[in-house]
View 1 (cartoon, rainbow, N blue to C red):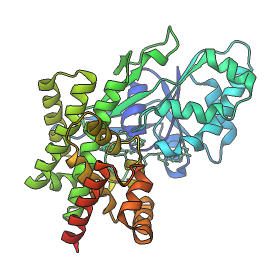
View 2 (cartoon, rainbow, N blue to C red; view 1 turned 90 degrees about the vertical axis):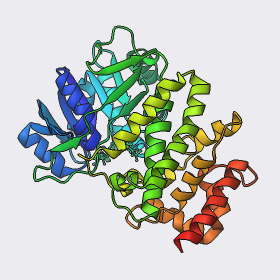
View 3 (cartoon, rainbow, N blue to C red; view 1 turned 45 degrees about the vertical axis):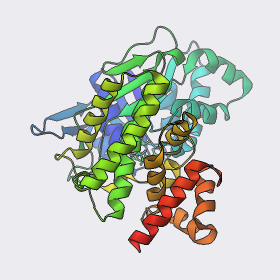
Length: 386
Ligand SMILES: NC(=O)C1=CN([C@@H]2O[C@H](COP(=O)(O)OP(=O)(O)OC[C@H]3O[C@@H](n4cnc5c(N)ncnc54)[C@H](O)[C@@H]3O)[C@@H](O)[C@H]2O)C=CC1
Ligand SMILES: O=P(O)(O)OC[C@H]1O[C@](O)(CO)[C@@H](O)[C@@H]1O
């Protein structure tokens, strides 16, 4: 069985590639990073270290790489022959991998009797695979689209495993937290699919993706932005700061109230979920930088993402949103020169002021109470960091 995975980065190697390989797939990573690709081709295996007291090492075998920027024909052929395709490139990169997938599908679907195919985007986003499908379908002619409708499915997924930036002598080594969850929406799958061990198949993904994105990811960036403002380098340091930990818990109670009301999660079970996630952020065996966790603040402030969506849902239900509004304010103050999105926010703030900037990136109008709460926090924080 052949798996093609776009993105040989931290989640690609440390989570999705690992599970696919353990499930018996021969995994071909498609990436634009020549260093990673040439090492994959040469070594055909890499180590994944589970960050805990025991530091277990798993060797992932039966892997290789293709540089999808320079070896375009091989990349298209790999897509045409794949039994499953997955991605972990970043949701904003999906449009750039769509042409390779579209060309591969054209080739595959024009051959004799093509096998059904699932394409699963493993990104931190709601509807990642659906977004990828839109990019790919935009590149297909009517006849190919019609064949793809019955033979290719793009089930959405939620992926959860903390994998920090890596620095090892072996560029393929990756250190990950032991915990993982990969949920895939079966309602979007072709019947008769081969299940992958370790994947949690669910018939309604929305509760899972929202619970994950609005707890793990909302919480992580809320702590990271607050930690950045207080001068901490690592999330582990930020979590030791009682004020940050208390505020984080407040934010997670806000998103938790929305999740319990909307999806009917048991309140006590959700509280245990929050506590477990705060413990995962603290994991002393990992060194996770606040600048990684806060990366791409424009994406994180966008209307369907981890801050704005739960805040507006809380507002609509008459629930508290003040901690989330403060998280939005801290995202505006994430002034990291190496992060192009942070630089763009600072430029917009200088040119258009805080209120217009917030509306521009979040879509929340200036007269909305969530907007007003975020601006109030922004002004207070700005005074404090002066
Ligand atoms: N790191 C983490 O803990 C988690 C990350 N995620 C999500 O997984 C995705 C990937 O994140 P990471 O692995 O952390 O990032 P990463 O930066 O380590 O990996 C991304 C990989 O994609 C490659 N890439 C970029 N453009 C490409 C293109 N056009 N074609 C092929 N490959 C391309 C990069 O070279 C890189 O190797 C993101 O959507 C992220 O939100 C989800 C859960 C956890
Ligand atoms: O990958 P993104 O969306 O920039 O956000 C980083 C997030 O991904 C994670 O690594 C895992 O979900 C979290 O640590 C963090 O919240």
